[in-house]
Image (cartoon, rainbow, N blue to C red):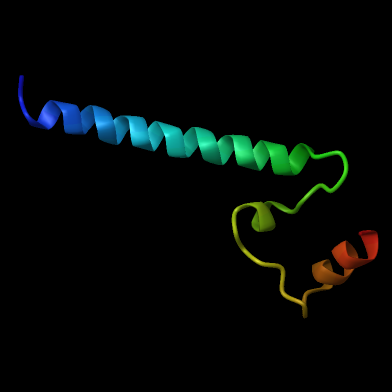
Length: 61
């Protein structure tokens, strides 16, 4: 067995886990009934306090 083969499987498994994790977190954040989130917030982009969207979200919650 080639030494690079296990590394390929490990890399493919890690990539698959990251993609599935990202999909689950995104779907969970977008479909939450109590506090739905903006896609940018789910993926890690903060909502600036100078943004009009910030005031919309602040007033809702």
